[in-house]
Structure formats: structure tokens, C-alpha cells
Amino acid sequence: MAKISSKDLSFINKRFAKSELSDEDVFGFNATIARSDKTTSYHTRLSKRTIEAFEKSIATTGVAMGILHAKSLPVGRVYDGKVSGNSIDAKFYALKDMSVTVSLPVGFGGASSTYNTNDIEKMIDAGTLFDVSVGFEASRESYGCNICKKPIMSMDCEHMPGRTYDGKKCFANIDDENATLHEVSICMAGALPGAEIHSYSTKGEWISKTLQNDTNMDYAVYSTNDIGKEDEGMTEDEKNEMARLSAEVERLTAVNVQLSAENDELKLSNEALQESNEKFASDYAGLQGTNQELEGVNLNLKSQVLGSEFYAKIGRHYNTSVEFEINRLGVALDGNDFNKELMSKQLSGLSIEDKEKIKDSLTKRLSLNVKTGVLDVNDVTVVETKKVDDSHLYKV
Image (cartoon, rainbow, N blue to C red):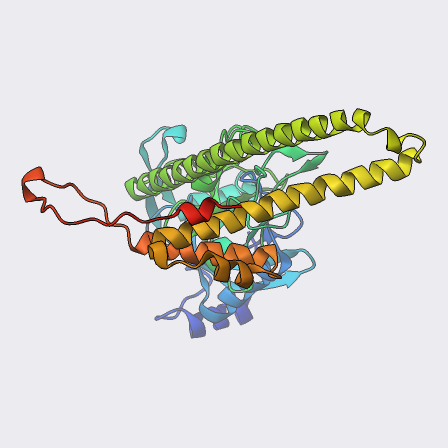
């Protein structure tokens, strides 16, 4: 075990210790705590800006050192950290002969174990304990998909972290210059190496595993072989958060199903319209045989002329339909006071878009005059009604 230098010990005493510490009270070690060029077993990768933010956290407040991310008191502290290239190296000091009880997750026996820092020091010296894991907070919006570059926590991104698309493996790139490093824990080598690969059945499950509580605390294990697995034990709050996220994913999935159904309906409508157009075109093409004057005309020119006439006719039919609807709505609103001739003059020269706007305006006016309800026959008062004469509307 590397002995803490007198310079570093003096720094620790000035910055952290409330009473003077000697080299007999503490032991120290160095570790690479994070990298920006490696992918975690949760299929996430920290950007250079994120690990630079970790350096700021260490410089500003120092960072707690724990064991297995246990929610217990820290046994030491990260007192220095520097980014070099794609990694951040840190210096630790821990109290000697300090016992900490850790509740182990189900995967490790589901019981509680007590660790003494003297034993941890021996394990580090012997090379049997060398993994560290960071606990940090980053904005959810900072999780970007390495394939489509969209926020991977949103439904705009269709990719699943850990899966391969066109030969490229998807992962979440965490790029947050304001990320906060909360703690660094010593942990054992990852259990069941590689078991996390493609193990998430849905994107919601991946989100739940990756973001386990309201503070966005992410635990990412870093090992010398770049593969690690954080313990899978969850508190009741973490289970509730996972359930909430799963429910949210189910809701968004239902919305997506509804939108898909509406899209199918639009597709059917489009197919029906296309079939109608094809029938219209077929009927129109049948009339070509009766016109002998078209014989000998250049086939390419004839095709263009027919296409132009076809769409012009459709436009005329639609224009007439819109004008008829305007007149119908006018009669429905104003009765015999509606002046069809005056309206025809007003419509003359207007574009189909302007006519559509007039139609929409009349429709809205008519809808404001409609009241719905249930009438009791005993409450109905017989009043004189006046028939509206709309026969002039159908005169051609």
C-alpha cells in the first residue's frame, strides 16, 4: 500500500480532518475512477466533459469513499483527482481499523456483512480487490444515443442500448458538463461477467435499470477489463421508481399504438382515394376510344395532355363542391335572407384556398348555433315555425 506523503497528509488535515491525522491513522491508494473511451455494462459511456465535471466535484467539495455503494457512513474520501487523456485518476485516503456493515443484495446472498478497513487494505495490497465504481448525478437530457444522436431517454430515439444496428452497437453517451460526482465505492469484481449484454427486454427496463431514483444517481462499475456489474439489490424507493418508469413506458407505448392505429386508418383512406382515382382514370381512359381525332397524335404529348385534363377536371369538381357547401351553409345560417347571387360574385376569382377558409368560417358559425340536450316532452312548448325556402340553391 502506497504511503500517503507528508504533503498530501498535510493537505488532508487542513481541508478535511477536524483533528490531526498521522500516517498511522490512515492508508491511501490511487485509482482510475472513470474513463470516456469505455462502455459500461449498463451500455453507457461518459463523455470527456462529464469526467471533467467529476474533477470539479472533487476539487470543490471532495467526494465520499464507500463500500459497495452501501447507504452507510463513508470510510474515507477522494481528496484529489485529475483528468488525463480519456481517464480521471484520483487519490483516496481511508481510516484504518474501521468497521462498516453492508446489507448485501440478493445476488450476493441477501444478508448483511461487516467489513473492516484493515482487511480492505490487505485485499488491495494483495491485488484481490481493485474495482471501483462511481455514483454520480447527470441530467436525463444529457443521455444521447450514439447512433441517432437524439435523447435516448425519449421515445424519439428508437434504439435499444446494448443492441447492434447495422454493425454498430448502441450505447448512451452521457454528456453533461454540470454532472456531479457524489461518491466512489470499492466493490468486488463483477458477478456473472457479460450477463448484462442484450439482457434488457424493453427500453423501459433499460431506463429503469439505468436511472434508479429521483436524483438521477447512476452507478457505473469500471473494471480493468472494462466489464463490471453493479449489485442488483434495490431499496423499496428504487423498486417504486422502477415501477413508475415502467408504467410511464406502458403509457407511452399505448399512445404509440393509438397513433399507429390512426396511421393505419389514414392509410386505408388513402388507398380508397387511390382506388377511386384509378376508377375515374379508367372511365376517362374508356372515353378515349370514342374520339377518333386523337389518332396519330404523339403518344408522349397525348399522355401529358390527358394527365393535365384529368387533374383539371378533378379540380373543377372539387371547386364546385366547395361552392355548393358554402351556399348550403349560408342557407342553414341565414335562411331566405341568404343571397346566392351575391355570394357567387364574391366567390368569383377567389382561390380554392380562400374558398376553403370561407367554408370553415361558416361551419364554425353554424356549430356555435347548435345546442344539444335531452328534452322532456312535457316541457316542450309548441311554437310557430317558418319553413325556409332553399329551392333557389339547387337552380343551375
